[in-house]
Image 1 (cartoon, rainbow, N blue to C red):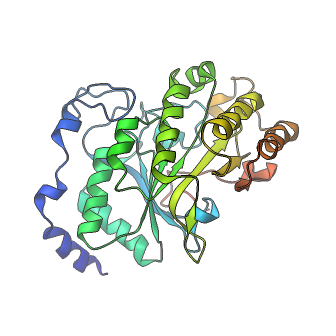
Image 2: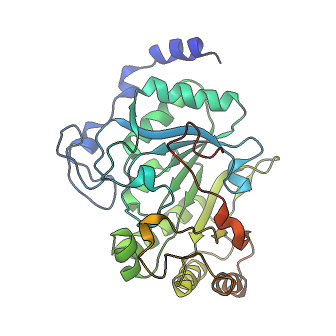
Image 3: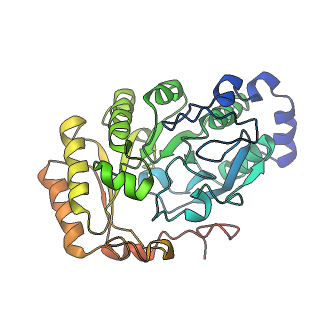
Length: 325
């Protein structure tokens, strides 16, 4: 589809389809922060995000799990800022809310044209990364794609800090949930992510995702996931017990059939150089404890990583493409 063709089609879309829902944006309660901020005003809430399409990058990403990237990569839409403020975030260039230059304000037509460009290049899926505070904008984008007769797999790539009510609302739009399950320890979630209630919020969110999609990750012939849940968990240095607790909750509270990506790729940024123990990389014995627990609990679907993976997966959002050298 040419740029001119997509531009012409966008111009003919129903204007009502492209309007952001005022009720959701004038007193924002989209995420668990429940700020009540009017995102059409200059007085912003926790995420310091207004009602624009505040996006850091739209690009083809081949570094996800094989079932997510597929053979041609996934078109990822990286929203700016975040409703968590993880001190160790690998995407800190775009996720920290005190950085007004974390992203730029796109026009909806620009968003759609860049997504279409990725789809034309062979991507079968569109992933929305850190979407929890931009759900209204995400819904407009997905509805507009459908109105253009484009129906890619829609992936909700979230930190797990989501309201059940919001997840229920987007159920018809989402094909695959790709959430992080960060903590089951509220003191860790307070210390590292400024969200003491993360464990309780996340547990409810994961149970709701499971209600919607079940434990099966349904894939196409080429291996790309088209329906289901894939839970990610990043093992933090010095906190193997937190990881073990997360796995135990999933096993006992959800299902051991669910797919899990058990990540060892933690890399300490300069921002945590004085924060022990996360100012170092992961030890082999720490990760092995978690891997052993994964198998001992009966999990049998998913991925584990080599410890050297911390040398990879380091995006640079100051570049045109954050994942290319």
